[in-house]
Length: 189
Image 1 (cartoon, one colour):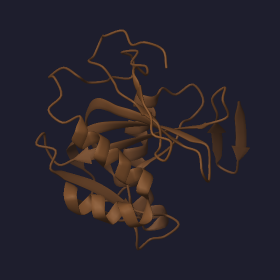
Image 2: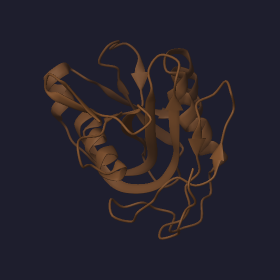
Image 3: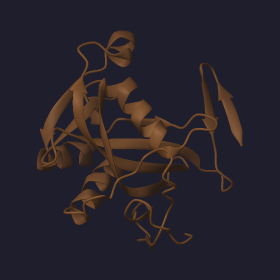
């Protein structure tokens, strides 16, 4: 299902969740510093870059496009951390990946158009900052921590066919699933 909004098409899955993608953008492969961007709605607050998927777009491609537009970075797309569902205010289903930044643009789309800023944070500091404004984004980092030291080769590319695998749920937290290594078949949710 699609809904049209000025300058944007919103994509929904069969269960009515808005399909989104995001990346935890790390400074290097140590993954101890993460890039956050200022919120377009609350410019004094920080968020993880991400947004809605476009028609016919795969989650990996959407994640890379969103960080390029919102944070002005490119890099090496890494593993799928999980798929997070937010049900309280909005029905969102967000695919969250890691990305190791290899290029940082001086000027980028959202910096020019809406004055968006970006800033590197130590992971602990980012958790604190996100917990107060965007707790679901803090969940991305907490999940990342619990899946640190992944097997090498656990990456995703737009055509590798990664899909959800085992699901971990808590009635009070966003739902997410764990990814597997590249090329593996994953079970249904």
